Image (cartoon, rainbow, N blue to C red; front, side, top):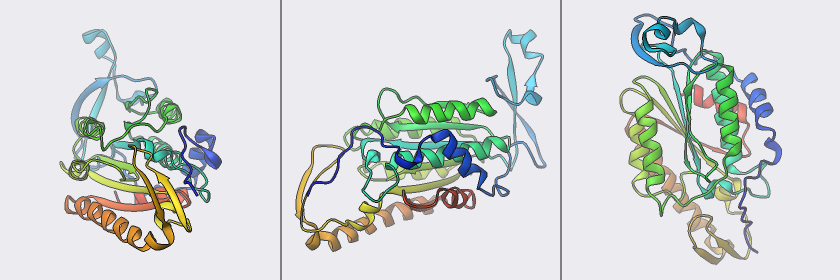
Length: 299
């Protein structure tokens, strides 16, 4: 048999994203997610350009007279929980097994959108960075308010998994650099990726996002097929990134495959935890509400 190869995102049971994300967010208990604007020791942290949907309480009304454009006042506290989401949109994220509700990217997008909705409801700002993806992919600059949720959902829906991160190391490097540049001290960084077919340098680069006292959570998103290799007998599989083709008897090679996968995942977990981050693993068959709660419980 031949494993299915998909060239476009398969949303399956997870469409429409806006509705599904809202339902997941409504089911999440987000009491432990602290706002960036609450707590003692608030310090002025500068200005940034006003974005429609921002909380008008933090609008610097004098800025229009001084600078001829509106600015929003920013504050930094020990409870800063501005959220940065980095989502893998490389080709391997387009895989959907026969037992899964949707492609890996679709499930990761649902988690990202639900997280954004929870954070925005708490008054926190959110930014989204993609690594990989087709030309329709566009990062979402940091912002807040209801319109920011709409911008994030639109960006997630427009993305198609594309690109070979192992062959194009700048895919991950550029995304990490963007997150590092736009995530302040004490903010939360969530990475959603299958952690497969990434360059050797990706492990250290992503783990170092935990520096500057940022709370880093990396949720590895896999399909059930990748965790169990359920195929029987002679199987021909082609890599979704690169041109590798493997013909094997999965009945005989399953044990060795699962051992190598466990070693691969363990190396990621160790690297992330050494930097003070949290490594979580989920499958596209997992309950999305529980997945979001587990992320919030670890920030």
